[in-house]
Amino acid sequence: ASASSAMSISNHAANWCDEHHTACLAYSRRYLHEEEAHHDHSAHALTDFAIAAGLLALLATFVVGFILEANHVHWVPEAAVGVLFGALVAYASPEGPMMDAERFDFAFFLTWLLPPVIFEAGFNMNVRAFFDSIVPTAMYAFIGTLLSTFVVGGAVWFAGQLGICYPLGMLASLTFGSLISATDPVTVLAVFQSIGVKIDLFSMVFGESVLNDAVAIVLSKTLLSFTHEEVSPEAIGLAVLTFMKIFVGSMLIGSLFGGASALMFKALHLKLHSETPFLEVALSMPWPWCAYFIAEGLSLSGIVAIMFAGIFMAVYTRLNFSDDAQKLSAQAYKCLAMIAETFIFVYLGMAIPTFPIFQGTTFKLVGVSLLACFVGRLHIYVFSAITNRFRGPESQPPPISSSYSFVMWWSGLRGGVAFAIAANVYSSRAFPQPCGGLPVEERGSAACEGHTDGEAILQITMLIAVFTIIVFGGSITMVARKLGVLVAPGETHQHEEQHDVVKKSHKNLLKLLTREDAFPEESYQRQQDALTDAERVNFKRLSNAVLSGVRLSRGAGVKMMH
Image 1 (cartoon, helix red, strand yellow):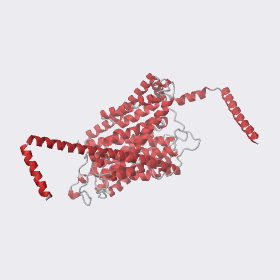
Image 2: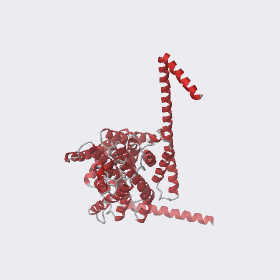
Image 3: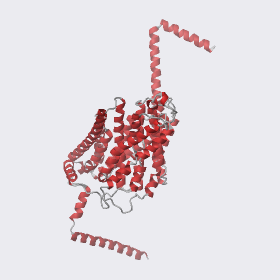
Image 4: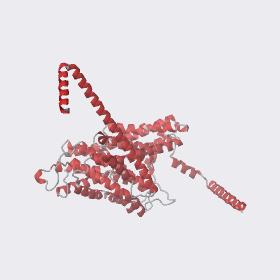
């Protein structure tokens, strides 16, 4: 009866539309528009729910991370907690707009999450210690990353050709080698800061991880350009020149904007106004992000630009801040970086359900790649030995010990940057061919059905990132303590004597960009050197007199109590 009634209504509506064609068309359009508006509203609501779920996962990560730290549970790093909560949120989300909103987005990661972390690292780091070890750091980050790319990529490709694992193509293998060489600074540096690792080791690990992130991004972008053009000596030479142009150009842009910010603060002379710390910090914020976006707009590296903007602002711009603004800026940028770096791991966890990580996973390829990564990191020992050829027992900084080398090798975690590049490779379908493009008759026993090189790169990158975050990030505290690389009570770091050319350049820039005539540590040393022997003797007598007075007052107090 209901079916007959529905048919009757349908026939009646059809007859009415035949008689009133224009009105029926207008009604249909309005109905479709209302349906689309309702669907859009539902999609927006689910996107809002996804954002709220991500923020709740971030909140939970902070809370659980604090509880673990307070109870000295170092074998569970906060990064692993973030990945876990991110994965739980994504697995609990329904298919559709909410799941789409939680999908890892390369542009969002590279524009809004990574820059605050890199800038804060440059702005708040010990610049002098960083430049004391700049030679080995540059070797680890530049030459080491390049060597690691070919070692890892070559090993993965060769293993595939032997039939040991899924056979990636040569270009896909090298691209994977470049992206997996990007070590993650967040987890290790957080642990290093909490347990007090020696400053020269901290500076080398920090410098290598931040610089090699930028190298990996530029190198993978360069390799991906060969998917559209034929590999030839001319193309390789052009790629090398492009690589150098990107780095040099990005460094210049970052330094230029850092210097411009120092000149602005010098002209405003806000250092005399102690009531303006919030204004000073607000004025400092646009400069590094301008450097980032202009570098990206010029097809350079925004990450390199914002890092050098941070270093330049740390050395010169900060000297033009008032005392309160110096403290507030360090704290404000640290807070932004803390939120961004923690959400990176939550975001990484969200990617596990939203990408085909466990669909036909090539676990043999994961094992081969992990071993190749261990071998690729051995360049640490090579460049440490080369550095030690030019350092003696009395040099500052001292020779790089085997303990330092092992900690640097062990702390080569993979994380957000590596997966971001892999996700971009997968989403752009840079390597859509299965089994490295091998003909069907040459594939042997490799499982290639429904599997592409881009998907394989995505899977192994995620699994290696999660493995290293949990295993290496969780054990780095124990390793650092066992090897004795923690700062001893009362220990101070001796800086390397700067070359005359470097000193002169620093002094010229200091006069140009600030109203100071010396860096703070130089001013302190001048005051110490300016004391005569008689003044030192008088100061010592005065100190002894004050101490004697304190002892007498304590003794008198005890007698009165009796």
